[in-house]
Image (cartoon, rainbow, N blue to C red; front, side, top):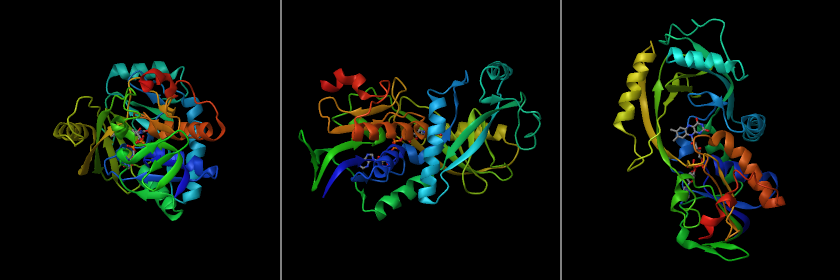
Length: 351
Ligand SMILES: Cc1cc2nc3c(=O)[nH]c(=O)nc-3n(C[C@H](O)[C@H](O)[C@H](O)COP(=O)(O)OP(=O)(O)OC[C@H]3O[C@@H](n4cnc5c(N)ncnc54)[C@H](O)[C@@H]3O)c2cc1C
């Protein structure tokens, strides 16, 4: 078999890269081993226009939002499944200081608004300091999107479910060979696994573990995403919510921890006025990095090997945008944003 591109991984990065290559009628094969605990399969799928306790605008969000909304809608139409929903985040203020910070930031930030009726959620939630709206925000329904795109690729003969073995890869100047496959280029979209990749492991990854609970809670409207330390995100199943998360930088395995479960259950008991049941507890490793900027582009020494990775906690908004940049770079030689281009690590990658 001969293709122009071999893509390793079909998380949110591999999904979008293959989508944009497909749109340009390029030939490719995606290899993915369907890891149940990959980052994209555990994520909540939130696109939040503001970040952190200081509620600052998310990096590049003014460009990202219109782009990703259009891209997900396109994919939704192609696949015939609902992959994106627009939501308002109800940001319950945990302290008076946080309320004041929000009121202050709201003066200069159009994503933040105060409600007319701050009693609106009083029947289901405990809160003493009111809440603000963050909008527009989005939920990407990864649990629908990833299998639907995979099935689409399977039907087109462009998908192979297997574990990629780097020992079988041969890179020569004009092409790459993997087992019986010849390709022009190989692009790694293998998430946290890239840290084990001899070509790219020198990139400054700073992986961190994150966890979530899936809960059943009757009576909470699925019109919103709710936040108060914990984020509560409606899934597309009635009364089912994703609850999380945490950031563990120092960990020995990628398994769920008892500490997270107990702490989150406690927080939910204090916050929710209604009973809930924990259905699932899962963990994954975020492919994050020190700079909090994506890793996009071709290897400086082996230019027929590339990467789309390093999305940290923002894969849903960054992946479509930078997959398009990478596809345009591969096909037309267009420029990749220097802040995201891996050529900024030319020295370490050339060692
Ligand atoms: C708890 C948690 C909550 C999160 N919430 C959000 C959120 O709300 N919004 C947001 O934008 N981001 C969120 N994230 C971050 C988001 O999940 C990541 O940014 C994104 O999923 C990374 O996607 P990826 O495609 O780079 O990697 P991955 O999703 O890890 O995909 C890599 C793929 O490669 C495959 N693979 C790996 N190695 C091999 C191999 N050797 N052979 C074959 N296949 C292989 C895996 O099976 C997998 O399918 C969250 C992460 C966590 C852990």
